[in-house]
Length: 413
Image (cartoon, rainbow, N blue to C red; front, side, top):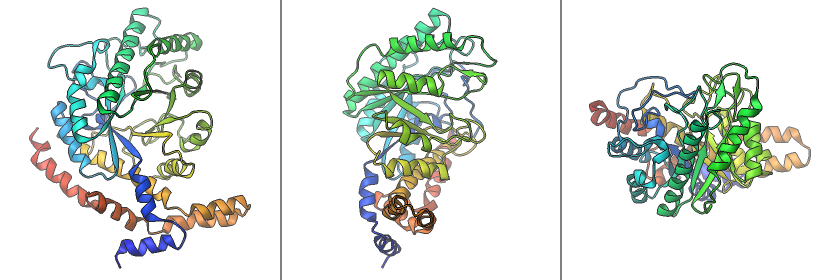
């Protein structure tokens, strides 16, 4: 018998079907973020990263254009099992050297991305880029007191929804468009309400035109604070939860956008009692919203457990969101994505029937015992088999391919 056969038998003894877990995992897509490949630079070359964003490091080989970024992403895809998507920001438009305002971008500027995604059988997700731009007014975009500033960013949001709709139609695959603005105040404002009223009005204008949800779903993302917005973030959790409920939008929960003692795993069941669907930005904050590479932490496993235990597979859209320039960027993609799939598989292999029965009977001792026993079940052998069947390297063998790509491609940039 193989190591996998032994593991499969051990799980079967607990009533857990590893083959069924493989099939279920194959149906859950993880959207990988393009901005890990180039440190959130995009192709405008207009301004340094700002809006509360900070990228640490200067590892050699950053993608400098769309061709390099797509090639790097293709290399990452070869090393990650499971169903993948690509998440794009508006600053990754290809304008053939022409200066095009963010409020003037069209689906044409993403035609190469759509052709490539169709060839690779990938779904595309999208984001307006409300940062790193001269039209940011003292850290404000959609909530600026200046009408011309608000109008610019409203036009940008409308343009992005048109692009997302085109993604959905071209690929016959629903695009999730996430709307996040870094608007906030470094010091305590006198009037928080006025800024939030302006933000709500701007969002209403962006969403005024109805788009078939078959092609595009809109999400709104909250944040606790950002660099330069330490005292007040206009788009707070309460603001966007209320706005999303009232206007039937998806709520985006980012793992790094809350107080360090808050976790989004605990918010999922509450939110999904009232929302049809939510979007997750899976990240890893260290002391603040630092967007560290996703590792197999207890919180990552808890997020996956909530998705799996309550059958939220079709109601939760999973996207990754981090950027680290201190390590090989392709390795960062691979580490985070593989860990996300690992966490989901671990959740699918837990002795759920035993834990549920213990909890429902009030036997909290048995519940704790099973939760602890689950941690030492032979998950690694099942994960290795999943990778083997997907045709990707098992264990750390994928690092050899990344190192070879670094030597042959990245080092020559």
